[in-house]
Length: 318
View 1: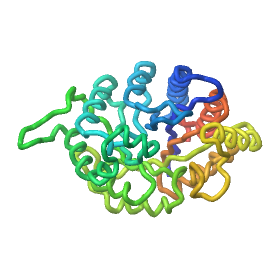
View 2: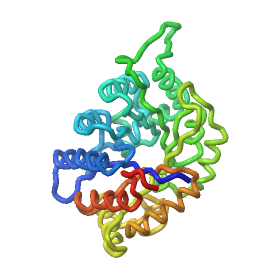
View 3: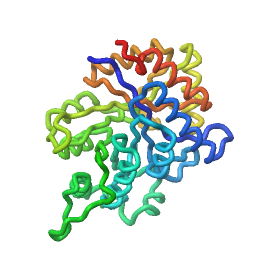
View 4: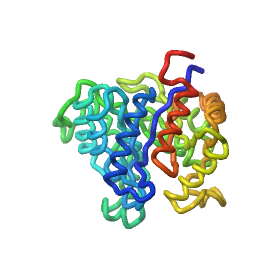
């Protein structure tokens, strides 16, 4: 296995008494820090009407972050496609890819991203949108290749960027992996959100993968929740406080009742790095997307710093 690569998944949390503007400013700081540290990607989640989360419109915030960074790849983790027309999604991400060529990832998900009433506010029939995911993904992939037609007439999602966005599917089960393999997309498995057999799901994705015009080989990222601190005790305290602050729970109790049923990686840089190495062998991938929930913004960035330093992701050393 080659040297591990790290990426960032940001929920854009409201921490402490900060307001939305401050949280958005901290998102920029995290992206800038990640770029400096050598992280591969900075992705933004999409959630709606969550009191402690400010990531309702990733494509808008990505445009803001892109103007304040230079190299790091930027993406959505994920745009909730059942709510939207593929054409508008393609337009938005073509615009981003035109602004920041070679840096844009389009991550797609099919979760509701909020309460039942939020789903009603966002669309007339979320479940129908989920049912139509294959048709929506087919349209989206055609639009990203500029090969989309309606009633025999070609329709382009302009502006057409010099390098199209990379398409990724995010999920926690076999259905999402099947979509990724069928449409030749990269696959991000939400290890921190799933209690299913992730390695088996990813193996099936690889076996069933159908090469697209752009990507000839399957690509896998595993998303994990991790909290790193100078000591095991401090990391454990940060992990509990961060989860409780965001969701009002410390994550105890049965897995079905936990906000993140997947096991978190919590500890010193050495301990977390060792766990990532184990997962790298288990999943057969060298890239991990890290979501870190901590009690302060400073502790969050420090966690990413410690892990990057331990794994030397910003150097050419092995």
